[in-house]
Length: 56
Ligand SMILES: [Zn+2]
Figure 1 (cartoon, rainbow, N blue to C red):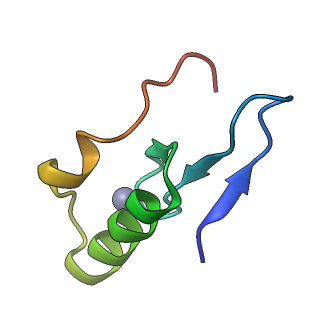
Figure 2 (cartoon, helix red, strand yellow; figure 1 turned 90 degrees about the horizontal axis):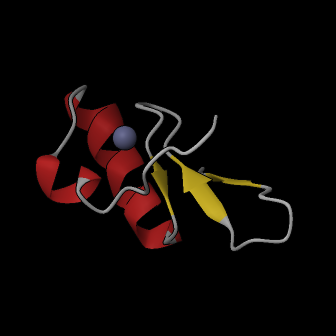
């Protein structure tokens, strides 16, 4: 499952456990994780929806 990351009052961020990309939309995080676990690679169509990592 995709795990929500607490962001201190901001909107929920969902992270793909396979590749570590973060998404504001759970649907994209789930797509990413499904793709990553199946293909063992990243899908550019999906990761372009990832949020930029400001601080980790
Ligand atoms: Zn991923």
